Length: 281
Image 1 (tube, one colour):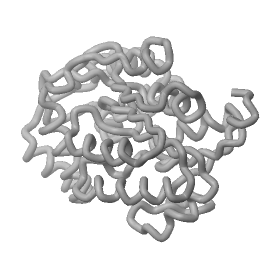
Image 2 (cartoon, one colour):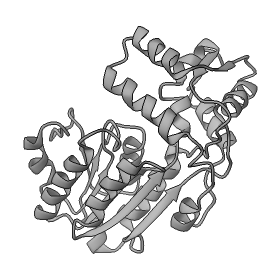
Image 3 (cartoon, one colour):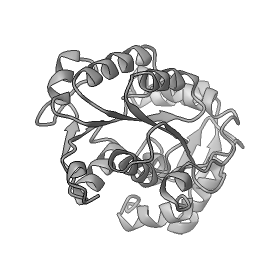
């Protein structure tokens, strides 16, 4: 990584303020790599919905980490990714690293756009984030001591976003990751009920888990004035992706990094240390 040619590489992190993107930015900066953050509030603004913002942020960029908002499963995402990759290649980008979703056919259509762009590529096909429990939509219910979700006994190999970021950084800064599809999972299968029970035990606080019908969950989200497009996305993920198709472990983290992925218990320890659930901790 001390190679002079490598140290001159300028890296663009799209979604640079999100769960994985912010971690990718931080890790790259710690390693001394020149990083440009792609977000609406960045020094050079980037907006997925405004293509006029794309060319300025891609100028003088060698590699791009692509974290699409809100999700690659949403209608029109593949066309947007195709447009971005074409412009990126035209602008001189030589390596594209895409954060994708495990078990999402729509996301795999987006992967094809990156794979066929004509430059080096790496696909990070991630399972459900551990951080949804501490930084996402499950945080407030955990703090309230009552988690109601429309999912029962389907296990998921929750992946730590720090592991995703580590793989992304490796792909962006080291040779040997081009042309790789990394399926990124944690080392253990857990149901959502299992996960909540482990968090409750670590906090020494009672947290109830209840499976509820999807219609009731949607109604609850509407009561909280959650936007319709986000309700659609959450419904899709719970009904389509959490049907058992991802109830298996993969070796992407180990192949990319040469180490085991972070266990859910270690994620809980880190989250507690950062005060994620401090209201009840």
